[in-house]
Length: 186
DNA sequence: ATCCTGCATT
DNA sequence: AATGCCGGAT
Image (cartoon, rainbow, N blue to C red; front, side, top):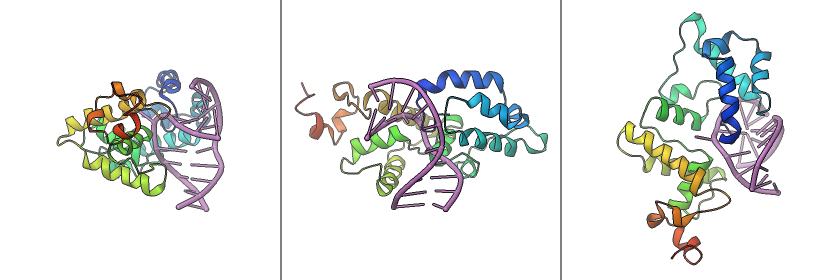
């Protein structure tokens, strides 16, 4: 649901969806129209179709669904791209796996590569290299690191405004001096 | 117009 | 590498 959709708009829908479909088995057994119905209002309905395809893939043979923890295995599932694979590996399994969403891409380029535009294809690839390069050593630390990276982008270093005075990494940020020296620095 | 915890298809 | 997909908020 969070793929290209704001958290604030997902929260309610997610709770309702889980109430209607408590398990992957429930999603797998449902008629597609029911899944689509529970998704209504969120947009990008291909995600709902992909979710059910994913559920039906994982619960085949009636066995309890097992979600892979390896990013490469996750990446093979319908609707799971590079970001979601990294997010599940990192957050659900505490694997030492990088992740780049819109927040991470913006923060990483602003902090480490001010001249890179993450919205271009080359720039986006570069953000993945940075994300891997700055990963901490352990999986447990990676969970916290990735969480913090995304939260920084969601709450402090947003697309429309940079709260540099409130930013915990401003002392090492390469665009801080450039962008906020006059307007933000005390 | 631009943005949002992207992905599949071409 | 580029585009379509959905919809609400800024």
